[in-house]
Length: 104
Image (tube, rainbow, N blue to C red; front, side, top):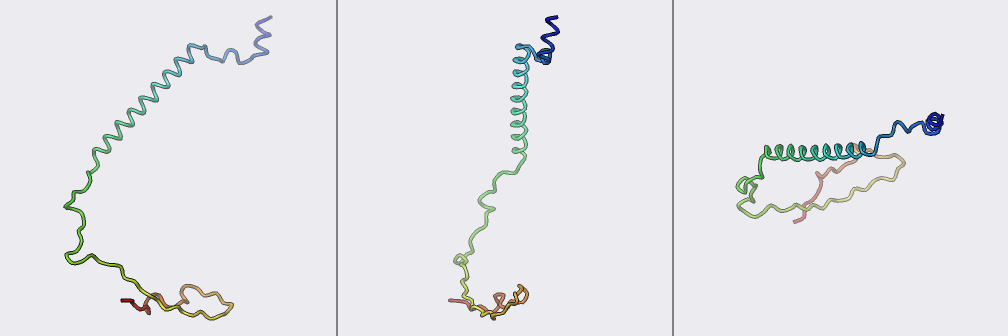
């Protein structure tokens, strides 16, 4: 009768694992995780060894024999927009850089 009363008040008592089994289970899971991490590290090292190395200094681009190429600076004239309620679309705008003046 006591056994039936215990099962009625604690129905999950039989599902719990013994203390020793859970410790062994955690140890096995820990060893498995460490083995997977080591395997991933080894696999990554193999993949990296197949990649080409860094480029040699001879294969790098060089500056031209003259002076280095400088930036060009332009000053554009502003275009006055008419005051209307019509919204202008990009294809209606003028001055896409063709009428700009170069500053020397």
